[in-house]
Image 1 (cartoon, one colour):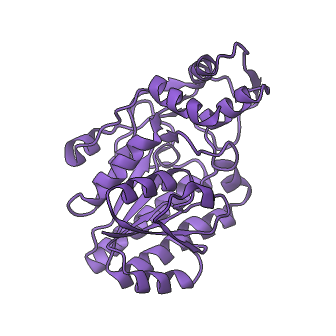
Image 2 (cartoon, helix red, strand yellow):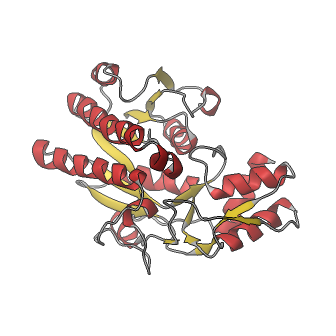
Length: 301
């Protein structure tokens, strides 16, 4: 297949590009390199250094004519979205519209990476796709807007675009700044002998899913019939104190974390129910947190 991956030089995107190249696809990466890196890209991928908000995106799509567009480029940091909501909306909403229009010109299907935790808001159980959506940050709202644009294009043009709501993804190549998750932050600081900080009381829970499992889910979604929305996560709640303990264990460190004030926009509980993906896509997250942490530590140590 001919495939385009926006944000393909980033954390999740580069792992997806690796998988696409491994199966023999022609892969075109669109990335501004604002947070992505050329070093993440293996041989065989064609890099188009471009911001998704640029008019040139449509020209590239028309020339390349991909069959599938995996749209991963985003402003993905909750804190940044709170501090700069207009910038967050510009990248995540306007950028997504640009991608949809480029895909329409190419007659390509879009697989959109949305967010699980930030879009559902607080939940007292693993969130299902049909649950009420109550984002508590501009980031969650901008991703929800992107999903609605996908649904509108599906109705308006008969497209089969699909959205995947990702839980907390972790693994090799994740940055410990900007969109970096807590695992990347903990492991980097433990490696460097620096202090680790938990914001809030550490009792907040998250659903941690390994990047390789997420890539398998995105590929399954691209081959699914019709459009739709799918949660990609484990359905397992783990609190941040336990995550720190496991990270310290895999790093061979004995230090205890420091505690700081809770951050604006952070959720207390964020876990997704992956049952629909299991039933429709035949997808499940295979790696345990312990196994995924061991692989991640091997890459960052």
